[in-house]
Length: 245
Image (cartoon, rainbow, N blue to C red):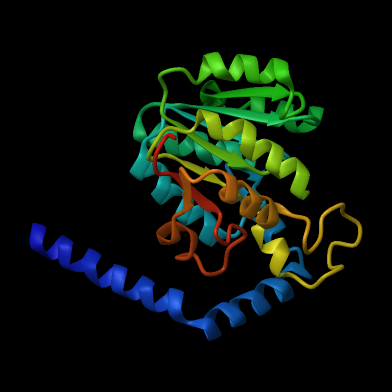
């Protein structure tokens, strides 16, 4: 039985290598994502009755990562409706331990009330403040001590803000754990696509990640998780801490 499991994993790794090498598949997937985004495709899903603005593929990959890591604490910047923090808390509930800290500078009252009615909120701590607030990070430094921490950075998507978050939150990530960075796909969408937003090609999470990795050699993109979804908002967005320099 153990040999069969190893054989399946070997076959899967071979399939993923082929996916990574398939330029045509990546091109078609990006075209599909742009076409689907015109219909706000990712806005159409819920978790526990609450909107979760994600590609389903990304949700499946994220649960693999959480099961693999079994973190004590998941920190997420960007709460929006709250579906993502509920999803993280649900995964930790299945594992049997862990908490979620959700951070947003504007948690709408109607969203907070809906979240607070759910029993899974026992695993969630909400903070309505700037994700880069010095007071918040004094608290997080204590809160993360001696814990295995997974970080998801999904708030403001400009280069400078994401770079600030990467610099600040990377300090909480243990060797072997990850930062998950959504919305890197902005760099691959047509220039000017986000005309009503402060981010664009050349100014987004992917460009911030490139600068962060150039200065932080103890982090690296884990292509196993980053590329298996294919249709994904987190292209090259699973960043593993490989050492602590």
